[in-house]
Length: 277
Image (cartoon, helix red, strand yellow):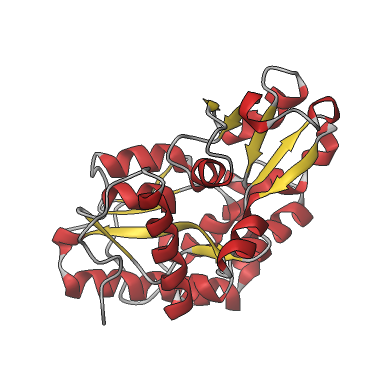
């Protein structure tokens, strides 16, 4: 039986999964042809348990822990890589509770971080992440939460960063910011879940060893084609946590889920977050 799998077209995900997609990882012919979709679509699919293995936001993880377990490989965690709240200079002093803010999906980590940072900021407008900067610069919204490649290009749109939400998280918790991870259906069973995890880890290691082999696949799906933007994107979001969360990474995720529960964003789950080895 082949397993369904989905991830985003962003450079960090295509970098991670290139080895699996191209069958370059030995003994890992587990998956059907992957489905590439934006992370909010993947989040919604996880709520419907559509895929066996999927990239999702850590915000969405808090809603699906009864059905999915987080893999220790493939995650995006780190420091200095969180979502940014950007706006125009004419909105620099507007109180956040009065702002209309575009978010890249209701279940994204970016949306949850904004809710944690500014609970009174409730005029939120979900839209595809690639549309947010234009929406802000064209005055259709007052501000926006940007992610992915947008971190490197927002100044070209005449915007400035009002708040780095990742830095805020790091300051108040001391943990790296958990952005997104790879989950697998709990019903697959412990043995197969650990096999999937090892295959993804092997694909990550291969990408680190032979990054040039990934370039054509990455550029085929990237929003921004500039080589430096792609390089900076991967360097920011793919790191040692991607190969293995480790205890520090797992604790960061637990803290994120715990704060979501306290904020009333989802119910406490009795299920463990990761499969123990």
